[in-house]
Length: 354
Ligand SMILES: Nc1ncnc2c1ncn2[C@@H]1O[C@H](COP(=O)(O)OP(=O)(O)O)[C@@H](O)[C@H]1O
Ligand SMILES: [Mg+2]
Image 1 (tube, rainbow, N blue to C red):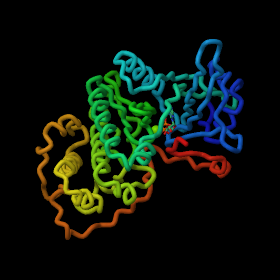
Image 2 (cartoon, protein in one colour):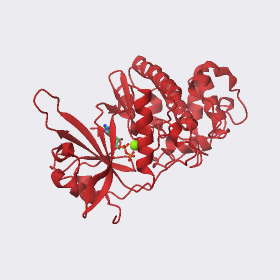
Image 3 (tube, helix red, strand yellow):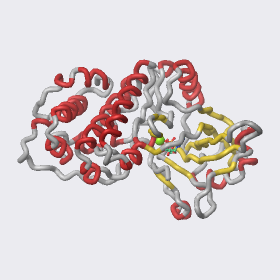
Image 4 (cartoon, rainbow, N blue to C red):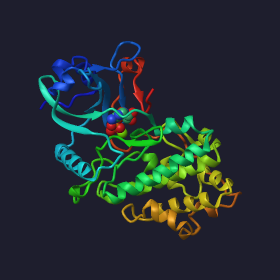
């Protein structure tokens, strides 16, 4: 195998599906193009994704695929995907999207590289959905209730997604779909290390590659839950704390439990529920990432997270606030490859589904 392809090479190759793909369905696809007539990619940092349609045959619906090309190699990728796919087929969750890991996926410089061929999930990414519904707290509350059910189902099915964050969560009407299973854990992967650490703005600050198990979604599940609950009550949080690449928290908030401004702002809401959830996040930060409780246990015993010196609910209003730089955080996984300037001009999108 030659050098791993970069964005530009993928971009070039997908423009000739007949030559680029081995899969018969993909050979016939038409790629979604931007206004300059170039393939319109999406990326979250680990992969570049193209939306492509297969022409519908007589009496069959047109199939729309997400073609996911990897920006870095992972040695046991095929095995991991096989284990994940097998487990997901067995547990039948309504949140995952059909996918196939194709080892002979895309041909570049006469070499084959793997891709994931995945059903295209319609909908808005979580942050876009929230932004559109900020003025409808009842809809955010409904989404929050759905979130609890989703998290409960994943736990019961012994699946951990590994990177719960806005870029991997699609919301359409009343349903939620998860995409990007690179970091997913299923029981057959017990004993391995994680291949990525998830998005910084959602993860336990101490999470490391050795932490890989059922527990890895718990912190992010609670962060998302608390974010929704807080936004239902105070939509100005969005304006102040949303950076474009988070919901309302950034990683530094988890390091500065008793200092950064968001904790004070949450306290000002004056809601017992929010105070307790904030205290639960603070308590989790002080536990080992693999020892944290699940969302259901937090919701069942909200009062079991007492205010302590490190817990945000104990902050006196006069405590000086350390300014946290709320720049859009970068995913903690791999450095995002530079985006060629021509790609930016042609509508390259990052965490946006427009
Ligand atoms: N099956 C899919 N359906 C719809 N959009 C998708 C799908 N898979 C990926 N995407 C889009 O592509 C983006 C990047 O894909 P993702 O698989 O999350 O890659 P990364 O590992 O780089 O985060 C997502 O944020 C989403 O906008
Ligand atoms: Mg992603």
